[in-house]
Image (cartoon, rainbow, N blue to C red; front, side, top):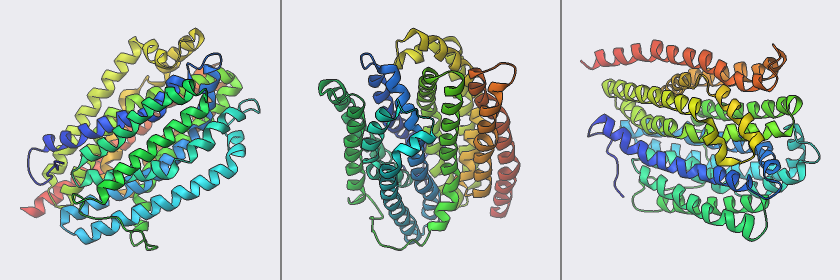
Length: 451
């Protein structure tokens, strides 16, 4: 399979060649969860309640993604930098340390999640009536944790070698399998919510198999080896703490939203939040693919001391991210019902969901500043700043605002959805301005020393 050559060719071409397969892969990856929700929302007689049950499982699902990102996105920039320097032995050790951490933590999450599922769901706001459906989905879903973490967590190392098409293939095969198995298990076999979870697990196992096949093949420069040695664990975890915090704080936000919405609007608004979160997942994909596609190129050229290429990749990514988020805001402003209809035809959900989407995405354009700033900090191993701005937007801003705003000015449930745009404006602007003020002078100095 063709490899993207980070040393040669046009910068924008390299970014797009890396980002486009990632975009396809992430779109297909979304199908694991989104297709579940689409089918679940149409279970006769219980679709809306089943959507709420899935929403109560989101914090655990997000936590799994957090640990996956910690070892995947945390190690891949370091790996790409060493490739740029030409140190393949150090790159191999970084990759294998991440592989070992992914496998061990996946097993730990699986065991602990199965043992403590019911009390965790209670913590997340589930009532006794909702726990049976949520727990039946969660216990089956957790069985796929090792497959999910290995596939998703190792893909950034494949991308860093320039083989983003392999990532697309592995995720795509799993998504297609999920599309086929979901209706078969949910409706054909009458398994309903349990069928959705089982289809997801089997699809994740298929995707993991394709990923591991690459690492055992001739194209891969650094084969996987398991041993109880973790030489670069601290470096990976410290840089990966930023994406981990982003996911964990998303989990905290989901818990906070579920609890406050249950208080002010009841279970129906938990279903609304499930739809809003699902739409957010869909609309995040293009800009996340772009930033993840640019990240290994920025890391590689930073390691090879090519500051002009680093600046060029930053500029291209920032401009495209800004244009995309502006476009998304416009579409949601005029056509919110289209997105709600993807998940449910319930008219009451259509009305409350449309209003929630308007409020939630009101300042989405500022999210492009957060994406761009965070991507640069992670790609250049600026771990302190990456961690700080991850905490600022979600933990410092969104969670307190979620609890506070519903009590002010009679906002009620509207206050929950307004917390997001307020945090986008404050957190996104602060992150972006700090990135420009700290990174650009460093790149200027690097450029002068090369003359």
